[in-house]
Image (cartoon, rainbow, N blue to C red; front, top):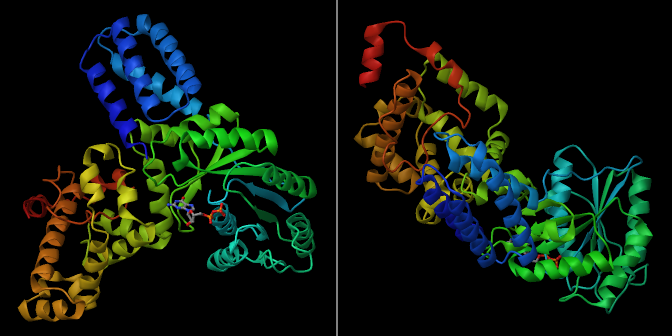
Length: 484
Ligand code: GDP
Protein backbone atom coordinates (compact mmCIF):
# COMPACT_ATOMS: atom_id res chain seq x y z
CA UNK A 1 0.00 0.00 0.00
CA UNK A 2 2.78 2.45 0.79
CA UNK A 3 5.10 1.57 -2.09
CA UNK A 4 5.13 4.94 -3.78
CA UNK A 5 5.48 6.78 -0.49
CA UNK A 6 8.32 4.49 0.52
CA UNK A 7 10.17 5.05 -2.72
CA UNK A 8 9.73 8.83 -2.40
CA UNK A 9 11.10 8.77 1.15
CA UNK A 10 14.01 6.60 0.03
CA UNK A 11 14.74 9.01 -2.81
CA UNK A 12 14.66 12.05 -0.53
CA UNK A 13 17.00 10.44 1.98
CA UNK A 14 19.45 9.02 -0.47
CA UNK A 15 20.03 12.48 -1.88
CA UNK A 16 20.36 13.84 1.66
CA UNK A 17 22.86 11.10 2.56
CA UNK A 18 24.88 11.92 -0.52
CA UNK A 19 25.42 15.47 0.80
CA UNK A 20 27.63 14.66 3.76
CA UNK A 21 27.28 18.05 5.41
CA UNK A 22 23.68 19.23 5.48
CA UNK A 23 22.62 22.87 5.19
CA UNK A 24 19.34 24.54 6.11
CA UNK A 25 18.42 24.68 2.44
CA UNK A 26 18.90 20.90 2.22
CA UNK A 27 16.39 20.57 5.03
CA UNK A 28 14.00 22.91 3.21
CA UNK A 29 14.17 20.86 0.04
CA UNK A 30 13.84 17.52 1.84
CA UNK A 31 10.76 18.81 3.68
CA UNK A 32 9.36 20.03 0.38
CA UNK A 33 9.86 16.65 -1.21
CA UNK A 34 8.29 14.80 1.70
CA UNK A 35 5.37 17.22 1.70
CA UNK A 36 4.73 16.55 -1.98
CA UNK A 37 4.99 12.78 -1.48
CA UNK A 38 2.50 12.83 1.39
CA UNK A 39 0.02 14.92 -0.55
CA UNK A 40 0.29 12.62 -3.53
CA UNK A 41 -0.41 9.70 -1.21
CA UNK A 42 -3.72 11.28 -0.25
CA UNK A 43 -2.73 12.28 3.25
CA UNK A 44 -5.06 14.99 4.58
CA UNK A 45 -3.64 18.48 4.05
CA UNK A 46 -3.79 19.54 7.70
CA UNK A 47 -1.93 16.37 8.73
CA UNK A 48 0.74 17.03 6.11
CA UNK A 49 1.19 20.63 7.22
CA UNK A 50 1.52 19.67 10.89
CA UNK A 51 3.92 16.88 10.07
CA UNK A 52 6.16 19.01 7.90
CA UNK A 53 6.16 21.85 10.43
CA UNK A 54 7.23 19.41 13.14
CA UNK A 55 10.00 17.81 11.05
CA UNK A 56 11.20 21.19 9.83
CA UNK A 57 11.37 22.71 13.28
CA UNK A 58 13.09 19.71 14.90
CA UNK A 59 15.57 19.30 12.04
CA UNK A 60 16.59 22.95 12.11
CA UNK A 61 16.95 22.81 15.87
CA UNK A 62 19.09 19.68 15.64
CA UNK A 63 21.34 20.91 12.82
CA UNK A 64 23.76 23.03 14.90
CA UNK A 65 24.20 20.18 17.38
CA UNK A 66 25.14 17.68 14.70
CA UNK A 67 28.90 17.41 14.58
CA UNK A 68 30.56 17.43 11.20
CA UNK A 69 31.43 13.85 10.43
CA UNK A 70 28.44 12.39 12.25
CA UNK A 71 25.84 11.00 9.99
CA UNK A 72 23.65 14.07 9.74
CA UNK A 73 21.22 12.53 7.26
CA UNK A 74 20.54 9.69 9.66
CA UNK A 75 19.77 12.14 12.44
CA UNK A 76 17.19 13.85 10.19
CA UNK A 77 15.86 10.43 9.23
CA UNK A 78 15.33 9.65 12.92
CA UNK A 79 13.39 12.90 13.33
CA UNK A 80 11.15 11.99 10.40
CA UNK A 81 10.68 8.49 11.80
CA UNK A 82 9.67 9.79 15.23
CA UNK A 83 7.20 12.28 13.70
CA UNK A 84 5.75 9.56 11.52
CA UNK A 85 5.22 7.31 14.55
CA UNK A 86 3.52 10.25 16.22
CA UNK A 87 1.03 10.89 13.42
CA UNK A 88 0.29 7.19 13.26
CA UNK A 89 -0.83 7.39 16.88
CA UNK A 90 2.32 7.02 18.99
CA UNK A 91 2.14 3.88 21.08
CA UNK A 92 0.03 0.86 20.22
CA UNK A 93 -3.05 0.68 22.42
CA UNK A 94 -4.69 -2.58 23.47
CA UNK A 95 -8.38 -3.19 24.11
CA UNK A 96 -9.34 -2.28 27.67
CA UNK A 97 -10.80 -5.27 29.41
CA UNK A 98 -13.85 -4.79 31.66
CA UNK A 99 -13.27 -5.20 35.38
CA UNK A 100 -16.34 -7.40 35.45
CA UNK A 101 -16.53 -9.56 32.35
CA UNK A 102 -17.73 -9.71 29.73
CA UNK A 103 -15.74 -7.09 27.86
CA UNK A 104 -18.09 -5.73 25.23
CA UNK A 105 -16.64 -4.68 21.87
CA UNK A 106 -18.98 -3.05 19.39
CA UNK A 107 -18.01 -2.80 15.71
CA UNK A 108 -19.29 0.12 13.67
CA UNK A 109 -18.66 1.32 10.15
CA UNK A 110 -19.99 1.45 6.62
CA UNK A 111 -21.30 -1.56 4.76
CA UNK A 112 -18.44 -3.42 3.10
CA UNK A 113 -15.84 -1.94 5.46
CA UNK A 114 -15.02 -5.44 6.68
CA UNK A 115 -16.85 -5.55 10.05
CA UNK A 116 -18.13 -9.10 9.79
CA UNK A 117 -14.77 -10.40 8.59
CA UNK A 118 -13.07 -8.49 11.39
CA UNK A 119 -15.50 -9.87 13.99
CA UNK A 120 -14.20 -13.35 13.16
CA UNK A 121 -10.58 -12.22 13.21
CA UNK A 122 -10.95 -10.55 16.61
CA UNK A 123 -12.74 -13.59 17.98
CA UNK A 124 -9.91 -15.85 16.83
CA UNK A 125 -7.27 -13.43 18.11
CA UNK A 126 -8.77 -13.46 21.60
CA UNK A 127 -9.67 -17.15 21.61
CA UNK A 128 -6.04 -17.98 20.73
CA UNK A 129 -5.01 -16.11 23.87
CA UNK A 130 -7.24 -18.29 26.02
CA UNK A 131 -10.32 -16.07 26.14
CA UNK A 132 -13.88 -17.22 25.55
CA UNK A 133 -15.41 -14.82 23.03
CA UNK A 134 -18.98 -14.76 21.77
CA UNK A 135 -20.01 -13.18 18.47
CA UNK A 136 -23.35 -11.36 18.31
CA UNK A 137 -25.14 -10.92 14.98
CA UNK A 138 -26.74 -7.49 15.14
CA UNK A 139 -26.31 -6.67 11.47
CA UNK A 140 -29.81 -7.49 10.34
CA UNK A 141 -29.59 -5.09 7.42
CA UNK A 142 -27.20 -6.53 4.91
CA UNK A 143 -28.55 -9.65 3.21
CA UNK A 144 -26.63 -12.66 4.44
CA UNK A 145 -24.70 -10.78 7.13
CA UNK A 146 -26.04 -13.14 9.82
CA UNK A 147 -25.21 -16.24 7.81
CA UNK A 148 -21.80 -14.81 6.99
CA UNK A 149 -21.08 -14.25 10.69
CA UNK A 150 -22.20 -17.80 11.44
CA UNK A 151 -19.84 -19.15 8.78
CA UNK A 152 -17.01 -16.95 10.05
CA UNK A 153 -17.71 -18.05 13.66
CA UNK A 154 -17.65 -21.68 12.64
CA UNK A 155 -14.37 -21.27 10.77
CA UNK A 156 -12.66 -19.86 13.86
CA UNK A 157 -14.53 -22.11 16.25
CA UNK A 158 -16.28 -19.34 18.16
CA UNK A 159 -20.03 -19.49 18.97
CA UNK A 160 -22.40 -16.97 17.39
CA UNK A 161 -25.46 -15.54 19.08
CA UNK A 162 -27.87 -15.15 16.17
CA UNK A 163 -31.51 -15.34 17.21
CA UNK A 164 -32.70 -13.36 14.18
CA UNK A 165 -32.40 -14.67 10.63
CA UNK A 166 -31.45 -11.21 9.43
CA UNK A 167 -33.73 -11.30 6.46
CA UNK A 168 -35.99 -8.25 6.49
CA UNK A 169 -39.01 -10.29 5.36
CA UNK A 170 -38.92 -12.68 8.26
CA UNK A 171 -38.12 -11.98 11.84
CA UNK A 172 -37.47 -14.04 14.94
CA UNK A 173 -38.18 -13.60 18.63
CA UNK A 174 -36.81 -10.07 18.75
CA UNK A 175 -38.97 -8.83 15.89
CA UNK A 176 -35.96 -8.13 13.69
CA UNK A 177 -34.71 -5.53 16.16
CA UNK A 178 -30.89 -5.30 16.18
CA UNK A 179 -30.81 -3.31 19.43
CA UNK A 180 -32.68 -6.07 21.27
CA UNK A 181 -30.42 -8.70 19.72
CA UNK A 182 -27.31 -6.85 20.92
CA UNK A 183 -28.68 -6.49 24.44
CA UNK A 184 -29.80 -10.11 24.60
CA UNK A 185 -26.38 -11.18 23.28
CA UNK A 186 -24.57 -9.43 26.11
CA UNK A 187 -27.01 -10.92 28.67
CA UNK A 188 -26.48 -14.34 27.17
CA UNK A 189 -22.69 -13.93 27.39
CA UNK A 190 -23.00 -12.93 31.06
CA UNK A 191 -25.15 -15.92 31.90
CA UNK A 192 -22.88 -18.36 30.03
CA UNK A 193 -19.65 -16.76 31.29
CA UNK A 194 -18.18 -15.73 27.95
CA UNK A 195 -15.54 -13.13 28.79
CA UNK A 196 -15.62 -11.14 25.53
CA UNK A 197 -18.62 -10.17 23.41
CA UNK A 198 -18.07 -8.88 19.89
CA UNK A 199 -21.13 -7.20 18.44
CA UNK A 200 -21.34 -6.92 14.65
CA UNK A 201 -23.63 -4.05 13.63
CA UNK A 202 -25.17 -2.94 10.35
CA UNK A 203 -23.59 -0.42 8.02
CA UNK A 204 -25.02 1.49 5.10
CA UNK A 205 -23.45 2.27 1.78
CA UNK A 206 -22.95 5.84 2.88
CA UNK A 207 -23.20 7.78 6.10
CA UNK A 208 -26.90 8.40 6.89
CA UNK A 209 -29.07 9.29 9.84
CA UNK A 210 -30.70 5.88 10.21
CA UNK A 211 -27.31 4.25 10.42
CA UNK A 212 -26.11 6.63 13.11
CA UNK A 213 -29.36 6.32 15.03
CA UNK A 214 -29.26 2.54 15.08
CA UNK A 215 -25.60 2.41 16.04
CA UNK A 216 -26.21 4.93 18.83
CA UNK A 217 -29.15 2.91 20.14
CA UNK A 218 -27.07 -0.25 20.21
CA UNK A 219 -24.28 1.66 21.96
CA UNK A 220 -26.71 2.90 24.64
CA UNK A 221 -28.26 -0.52 25.09
CA UNK A 222 -25.03 -2.45 25.60
CA UNK A 223 -22.68 0.18 26.99
CA UNK A 224 -19.58 -1.20 25.22
CA UNK A 225 -16.09 -1.07 26.72
CA UNK A 226 -14.75 -0.35 23.26
CA UNK A 227 -16.44 0.91 20.13
CA UNK A 228 -14.18 0.12 17.20
CA UNK A 229 -14.73 2.02 14.00
CA UNK A 230 -13.91 -0.24 11.08
CA UNK A 231 -12.82 1.53 7.92
CA UNK A 232 -11.67 0.41 4.51
CA UNK A 233 -8.25 1.98 3.87
CA UNK A 234 -8.84 1.68 0.13
CA UNK A 235 -11.43 4.47 0.13
CA UNK A 236 -8.70 7.08 0.59
CA UNK A 237 -9.75 10.56 1.70
CA UNK A 238 -13.33 9.36 2.18
CA UNK A 239 -12.12 7.21 5.04
CA UNK A 240 -11.24 10.37 6.96
CA UNK A 241 -14.60 12.02 6.20
CA UNK A 242 -16.54 8.90 7.20
CA UNK A 243 -14.60 8.51 10.40
CA UNK A 244 -15.28 12.09 11.36
CA UNK A 245 -19.00 11.59 10.69
CA UNK A 246 -19.01 8.48 12.88
CA UNK A 247 -17.11 10.24 15.59
CA UNK A 248 -19.78 12.93 15.76
CA UNK A 249 -22.74 10.61 15.21
CA UNK A 250 -21.87 7.62 17.35
CA UNK A 251 -18.42 8.16 18.84
CA UNK A 252 -15.71 5.51 18.96
CA UNK A 253 -12.65 4.60 20.97
CA UNK A 254 -10.38 3.15 18.35
CA UNK A 255 -10.03 2.55 14.63
CA UNK A 256 -9.51 -0.66 12.69
CA UNK A 257 -8.05 -0.21 9.22
CA UNK A 258 -9.01 -2.94 6.80
CA UNK A 259 -7.73 -3.84 3.32
CA UNK A 260 -4.23 -2.58 3.97
CA UNK A 261 -3.21 -5.26 1.50
CA UNK A 262 -4.80 -3.20 -1.27
CA UNK A 263 -2.94 -0.88 -3.60
CA UNK A 264 -4.49 2.42 -2.53
CA UNK A 265 -2.02 5.13 -1.67
CA UNK A 266 -2.23 4.82 2.09
CA UNK A 267 -3.28 8.37 2.93
CA UNK A 268 -6.16 7.17 5.10
CA UNK A 269 -3.85 5.22 7.35
CA UNK A 270 -1.66 8.26 7.82
CA UNK A 271 -4.48 10.73 8.38
CA UNK A 272 -7.11 9.01 10.51
CA UNK A 273 -5.40 8.92 13.85
CA UNK A 274 -4.43 12.62 13.76
CA UNK A 275 -7.78 13.70 12.40
CA UNK A 276 -9.92 11.81 14.90
CA UNK A 277 -7.51 11.79 17.85
CA UNK A 278 -8.30 8.12 18.22
CA UNK A 279 -5.72 5.34 17.99
CA UNK A 280 -5.61 2.83 15.17
CA UNK A 281 -5.82 -0.38 17.16
CA UNK A 282 -5.83 -3.14 14.59
CA UNK A 283 -4.98 -3.54 10.94
CA UNK A 284 -6.41 -6.08 8.57
CA UNK A 285 -4.38 -7.23 5.59
CA UNK A 286 -6.49 -9.86 3.85
CA UNK A 287 -9.66 -11.88 3.93
CA UNK A 288 -8.40 -14.85 5.91
CA UNK A 289 -8.81 -15.01 9.72
CA UNK A 290 -5.09 -14.71 10.46
CA UNK A 291 -4.49 -11.77 8.10
CA UNK A 292 -4.77 -9.24 10.85
CA UNK A 293 -2.65 -7.81 13.63
CA UNK A 294 -2.39 -5.24 16.37
CA UNK A 295 -1.48 -1.92 14.78
CA UNK A 296 1.97 -0.80 15.85
CA UNK A 297 2.66 2.79 14.77
CA UNK A 298 6.43 2.30 15.01
CA UNK A 299 6.40 -0.80 12.82
CA UNK A 300 4.21 0.94 10.27
CA UNK A 301 6.52 3.96 10.21
CA UNK A 302 9.43 1.61 9.74
CA UNK A 303 7.75 0.02 6.74
CA UNK A 304 6.86 3.34 5.20
CA UNK A 305 10.46 4.46 5.52
CA UNK A 306 11.68 1.29 3.80
CA UNK A 307 13.17 -0.28 6.93
CA UNK A 308 10.81 -3.25 6.76
CA UNK A 309 8.93 -4.77 9.66
CA UNK A 310 11.27 -7.33 11.06
CA UNK A 311 9.48 -7.42 14.43
CA UNK A 312 6.26 -8.70 12.86
CA UNK A 313 8.17 -11.09 10.64
CA UNK A 314 9.95 -12.59 13.64
CA UNK A 315 6.66 -12.89 15.55
CA UNK A 316 5.04 -14.73 12.67
CA UNK A 317 8.02 -17.04 12.35
CA UNK A 318 7.85 -17.76 16.07
CA UNK A 319 4.19 -18.67 15.77
CA UNK A 320 4.81 -20.95 12.78
CA UNK A 321 7.86 -22.76 14.15
CA UNK A 322 6.78 -24.69 17.19
CA UNK A 323 9.16 -24.58 20.12
CA UNK A 324 10.21 -28.21 19.85
CA UNK A 325 11.15 -27.93 16.18
CA UNK A 326 13.07 -24.70 16.78
CA UNK A 327 14.93 -26.12 19.77
CA UNK A 328 15.81 -29.28 17.84
CA UNK A 329 17.15 -27.30 14.89
CA UNK A 330 19.05 -24.94 17.15
CA UNK A 331 20.70 -27.84 18.96
CA UNK A 332 21.62 -29.49 15.67
CA UNK A 333 23.05 -26.30 14.31
CA UNK A 334 25.09 -25.68 17.42
CA UNK A 335 26.39 -29.23 17.70
CA UNK A 336 27.59 -29.21 14.14
CA UNK A 337 25.22 -31.91 12.90
CA UNK A 338 24.24 -31.84 9.27
CA UNK A 339 21.13 -29.98 8.29
CA UNK A 340 19.12 -32.63 6.44
CA UNK A 341 16.27 -32.67 3.97
CA UNK A 342 14.08 -33.79 6.87
CA UNK A 343 14.85 -30.53 8.67
CA UNK A 344 14.27 -28.71 5.43
CA UNK A 345 10.84 -30.34 5.10
CA UNK A 346 9.92 -29.21 8.61
CA UNK A 347 10.93 -25.70 7.63
CA UNK A 348 8.88 -25.79 4.48
CA UNK A 349 5.88 -26.90 6.51
CA UNK A 350 6.38 -24.08 8.99
CA UNK A 351 6.80 -21.62 6.13
CA UNK A 352 3.48 -22.69 4.64
CA UNK A 353 1.91 -21.97 8.04
CA UNK A 354 3.34 -18.45 7.98
CA UNK A 355 1.08 -17.63 5.05
CA UNK A 356 1.59 -15.69 1.88
CA UNK A 357 5.30 -15.48 1.05
CA UNK A 358 5.07 -12.27 -0.97
CA UNK A 359 3.57 -10.53 2.05
CA UNK A 360 6.29 -11.88 4.31
CA UNK A 361 9.07 -10.90 1.93
CA UNK A 362 7.49 -7.44 1.74
CA UNK A 363 8.33 -6.99 5.44
CA UNK A 364 12.05 -7.25 4.80
CA UNK A 365 14.11 -4.07 4.93
CA UNK A 366 14.59 -2.68 1.43
CA UNK A 367 11.74 -4.80 0.09
CA UNK A 368 10.79 -1.89 -2.14
CA UNK A 369 13.94 -2.42 -4.18
CA UNK A 370 13.05 -6.03 -4.98
CA UNK A 371 9.36 -5.32 -5.48
CA UNK A 372 9.26 -7.02 -8.88
CA UNK A 373 10.85 -10.22 -7.59
CA UNK A 374 8.48 -10.23 -4.62
CA UNK A 375 5.46 -9.74 -6.87
CA UNK A 376 6.66 -12.55 -9.10
CA UNK A 377 7.33 -14.89 -6.22
CA UNK A 378 5.75 -18.20 -7.13
CA UNK A 379 3.77 -19.30 -4.06
CA UNK A 380 3.38 -22.75 -5.64
CA UNK A 381 7.14 -23.29 -5.39
CA UNK A 382 6.93 -24.23 -1.71
CA UNK A 383 4.14 -26.75 -2.36
CA UNK A 384 6.07 -28.29 -5.27
CA UNK A 385 9.30 -28.47 -3.31
CA UNK A 386 7.46 -30.05 -0.38
CA UNK A 387 6.00 -32.69 -2.70
CA UNK A 388 9.47 -33.67 -3.90
CA UNK A 389 10.90 -33.98 -0.39
CA UNK A 390 7.82 -35.86 0.81
CA UNK A 391 8.31 -38.42 -1.96
CA UNK A 392 11.73 -39.35 -0.55
CA UNK A 393 12.18 -42.05 2.06
CA UNK A 394 13.34 -40.96 5.54
CA UNK A 395 16.81 -42.37 4.89
CA UNK A 396 17.10 -40.48 1.59
CA UNK A 397 16.10 -37.28 3.39
CA UNK A 398 18.79 -37.86 5.96
CA UNK A 399 21.44 -38.78 3.40
CA UNK A 400 20.88 -37.25 -0.06
CA UNK A 401 23.98 -39.09 -1.30
CA UNK A 402 21.76 -42.17 -1.57
CA UNK A 403 19.85 -40.46 -4.34
CA UNK A 404 21.04 -42.30 -7.41
CA UNK A 405 19.39 -42.10 -10.83
CA UNK A 406 16.67 -44.67 -10.25
CA UNK A 407 15.73 -43.24 -6.87
CA UNK A 408 15.48 -39.77 -8.41
CA UNK A 409 13.24 -41.14 -11.17
CA UNK A 410 10.97 -42.74 -8.54
CA UNK A 411 10.78 -39.46 -6.58
CA UNK A 412 9.96 -37.51 -9.73
CA UNK A 413 7.14 -39.92 -10.49
CA UNK A 414 5.85 -39.83 -6.91
CA UNK A 415 5.75 -36.04 -6.75
CA UNK A 416 4.50 -35.46 -10.26
CA UNK A 417 7.66 -33.51 -11.16
CA UNK A 418 10.45 -33.99 -13.67
CA UNK A 419 13.76 -35.68 -12.77
CA UNK A 420 15.45 -32.35 -13.57
CA UNK A 421 13.32 -30.70 -10.81
CA UNK A 422 14.52 -33.32 -8.34
CA UNK A 423 18.13 -32.81 -9.45
CA UNK A 424 17.73 -29.10 -9.15
CA UNK A 425 16.37 -29.31 -5.61
CA UNK A 426 19.10 -31.69 -4.48
CA UNK A 427 21.78 -29.42 -5.96
CA UNK A 428 20.33 -26.34 -4.32
CA UNK A 429 19.93 -28.15 -1.04
CA UNK A 430 23.52 -29.36 -1.11
CA UNK A 431 24.71 -25.82 -1.79
CA UNK A 432 22.56 -24.51 1.10
CA UNK A 433 23.92 -27.20 3.38
CA UNK A 434 27.43 -26.18 2.47
CA UNK A 435 26.64 -22.55 3.10
CA UNK A 436 25.27 -23.40 6.54
CA UNK A 437 28.45 -25.19 7.40
CA UNK A 438 30.40 -22.09 6.44
CA UNK A 439 28.18 -19.91 8.62
CA UNK A 440 28.49 -22.31 11.50
CA UNK A 441 32.23 -22.34 11.22
CA UNK A 442 32.39 -18.59 11.32
CA UNK A 443 33.33 -18.12 7.65
CA UNK A 444 31.54 -15.65 5.41
CA UNK A 445 29.13 -17.63 3.24
CA UNK A 446 29.96 -17.51 -0.43
CA UNK A 447 26.46 -16.36 -1.37
CA UNK A 448 22.96 -17.66 -1.45
CA UNK A 449 22.56 -20.76 -3.60
CA UNK A 450 21.06 -19.53 -6.85
CA UNK A 451 17.36 -20.17 -7.25
CA UNK A 452 16.76 -21.59 -3.77
CA UNK A 453 13.12 -20.72 -3.05
CA UNK A 454 14.11 -19.74 0.46
CA UNK A 455 17.47 -20.26 2.07
CA UNK A 456 17.50 -23.47 4.01
CA UNK A 457 18.42 -21.77 7.27
CA UNK A 458 17.36 -23.34 10.55
CA UNK A 459 15.19 -20.46 11.71
CA UNK A 460 14.92 -16.72 11.63
CA UNK A 461 16.71 -16.08 14.91
CA UNK A 462 19.48 -18.63 14.63
CA UNK A 463 21.69 -18.77 17.72
CA UNK A 464 24.47 -16.47 16.59
CA UNK A 465 26.18 -16.63 19.97
CA UNK A 466 26.60 -20.37 19.72
CA UNK A 467 28.26 -20.25 16.32
CA UNK A 468 31.81 -20.27 17.52
CA UNK A 469 31.31 -23.09 20.03
CA UNK A 470 30.40 -25.46 17.24
CA UNK A 471 33.68 -25.04 15.36
CA UNK A 472 35.47 -28.29 15.06
CA UNK A 473 38.50 -28.47 17.31
CA UNK A 474 40.30 -30.49 14.67
CA UNK A 475 41.96 -28.07 12.18
CA UNK A 476 42.12 -30.70 9.45
CA UNK A 477 38.43 -31.43 9.81
CA UNK A 478 37.61 -27.75 9.90
CA UNK A 479 39.61 -27.03 6.78
CA UNK A 480 37.88 -29.92 5.10
CA UNK A 481 34.43 -28.64 6.13
CA UNK A 482 35.20 -25.13 4.98
CA UNK A 483 36.50 -26.39 1.72
CA UNK A 484 33.44 -28.47 0.98
P1 GDP B 1 -19.14 -5.58 6.37
O1 GDP B 1 -20.25 -5.21 5.46
O2 GDP B 1 -18.56 -4.38 7.03
O3 GDP B 1 -19.53 -6.63 7.37
O4 GDP B 1 -17.97 -6.16 5.46
P2 GDP B 1 -17.45 -7.66 5.20
O5 GDP B 1 -16.82 -8.21 6.42
O6 GDP B 1 -18.55 -8.44 4.60
O7 GDP B 1 -16.30 -7.37 4.14
C1 GDP B 1 -16.58 -6.86 2.84
C2 GDP B 1 -15.63 -7.50 1.84
O8 GDP B 1 -14.30 -7.11 2.11
C3 GDP B 1 -15.64 -9.02 1.91
O9 GDP B 1 -15.54 -9.51 0.60
C4 GDP B 1 -14.38 -9.36 2.71
O10 GDP B 1 -13.88 -10.63 2.35
C5 GDP B 1 -13.45 -8.25 2.26
N1 GDP B 1 -12.43 -7.92 3.27
C6 GDP B 1 -12.56 -7.66 4.58
N2 GDP B 1 -11.38 -7.34 5.16
C7 GDP B 1 -10.44 -7.39 4.17
C8 GDP B 1 -9.02 -7.14 4.12
O11 GDP B 1 -8.36 -6.78 5.08
N3 GDP B 1 -8.43 -7.28 2.90
C9 GDP B 1 -9.12 -7.64 1.79
N4 GDP B 1 -8.45 -7.75 0.65
N5 GDP B 1 -10.44 -7.86 1.79
C10 GDP B 1 -11.11 -7.75 2.97
